[in-house]
Amino acid sequence: MTNHKKPLGKSIAFGCIVFTTLLCLTLSALNFFNLRNALYQRYQSYISDILRYVEKHIDHEDLKNCIETGVESETYKETLLFMDGIMDNFDIHYLYAGKPLNLNDRGNYMSVFCAEDYFNRYVDTEGNLYLGWISDDEYDAETIKELFDIMEREDISFFVEKTEWSTDYTGALALRGEDGEAYAFLAVDVDITTLSEKLWTQALENTAVILVLGSLFTFLFLLWARKSISNPIRMLEKGVVAYAKNSHGQHDLNALKFNAPVIRTDNEVKSLSAAITKMTEDMQDYVSEILSAEEKTRNMKELADEMSELAIIDSLTGLWNKTAFNREAEKLNQEISEQKNPHFGLAMVDLNFLKRINDTFGHEKGDKALRSLARITRTIFSFSSVYRVGGDELIVVLQGQDYVKNEALKSVFIANTARTYIPEEPWKHVSAAIGIALFDPKVDNCTQDVLERADRAMYAMKKEMKAERSD
Image 1 (tube, helix red, strand yellow):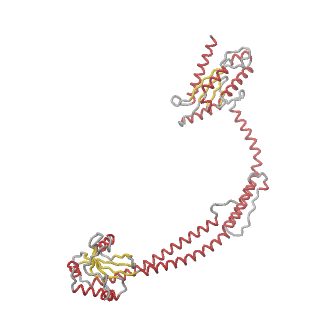
Image 2 (image 1 turned 30 degrees about the vertical axis):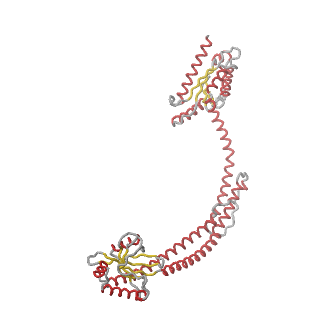
Image 3 (image 1 turned 180 degrees about the vertical axis):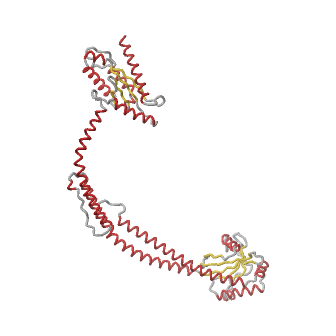
């Protein structure tokens, strides 16, 4: 049985595994992102309420003046105490206000205020930020650019900020004076470090559950597929392969029988097996009819081939006749019209003294002379086709080695045929003239043009031979 590169059972198993894996990843990703987005929306609502509440308690003109002068007013101090209270009463990581100064790598950020809980404000004060504090290199240019963008927006901006200590979900709002110009921004950070860890833990748990369910489904599906699909098809394939092997070159019709496997699944595979059985029986009947008619057809074909060959063969010389030459000429003309520039030439051969031989010794001797000329021509031009196109005229279509060596072969032909009339037995020592012309695409438009040049060359030689005899 054939060793398939992709067996059906393995293909089904691979497809199930790939499907289960993709389903697991997709559902896990959707669950993770949907849950995360839902939590982010809750945080956005929570942060928005804090920002709007805090902003209402800010005296913008006083705070703006404090930023410009660098002096903490009484209102500023009251606002700072209010912010510290927010830190104590709400579950937030940071509450602060600041102002981006420039896009340089240093000195690009100024602190306006930073709320602290009681311990950090009054006990462990190291690291507290005060009004007018300018950063050294704590903020890069990309972060500062984002702060400038926040100050240009009307709505609250939300983003995730990762530091070496924690991961925060931040909401920021531009603070605007009475003139509507932004002079600083207010931001709230909520620590989501543990949230991210919980999200990933839950995503992994969901992935594990989906993977277990998917594996169970894959296992059950593969059991069913093996019983209902792959095994029956494998049995059917085995029977078909055995039938094909036994039928190859088989002449015994009784041996052309398909042994259908026993398939117990009531599905399309069972119907396919029945159809193959019926098809092989029909093939057996059809082959029987073919064999009975084959002998008749073979006899008729052999007769037709013989008749077709006789129609293009000259019965006297055994050469191709004029009909065959016309077919070859049409083929060459087609190649010429398609600008294939075929490499061929034509040799025109004419038997001398045929009429004298016929009149003096009878047509039987003339026929012998023609057969002698045909034999000589076919022997010399062994790579080409020779045609008898008239009573004493032959045409050679020069191809292959004969085309390449046409001048040398012409000399051999002349040496064997260019002799004067010999009265004793002229039919044995034939005399003939030959003219050769090679196809030249610059001067020839068709085979007839080549033939006319060969004919003129032949008659020129014939004329020379008559002049020699008169001398």
